[in-house]
Amino acid sequence: MNTLDDWADAVCAELDLDRDDAVQKTVLNLARVAAHQVDRPAAPLTAFFLGLAVGRGMPLEETAARIQRLARGFAARSD
Image (cartoon, rainbow, N blue to C red; front, side):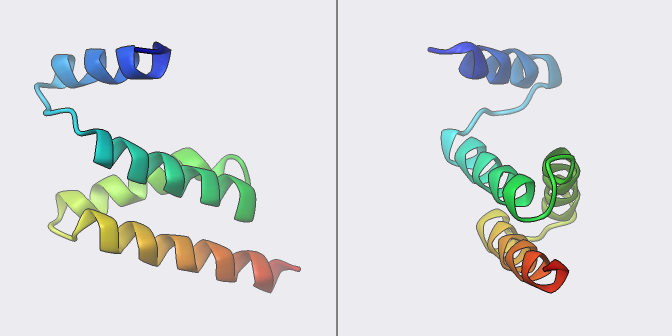
């Protein structure tokens, strides 16, 4: 285990959530794309928006992929 895993376990326990490594990987990948393609502060905000969308019933993987495409296109528009 590393610090990130320990933190994820602690937060999930605190909030009574099931920890899912696949979800963690999806969110971290999305945050990486947002940070590199848009701006570093976009990473946590984008992860939050993903959480809101998933909380409203949108599928995690599909929604993350949509946001990643948007981030890559956004970076191209900004150049």
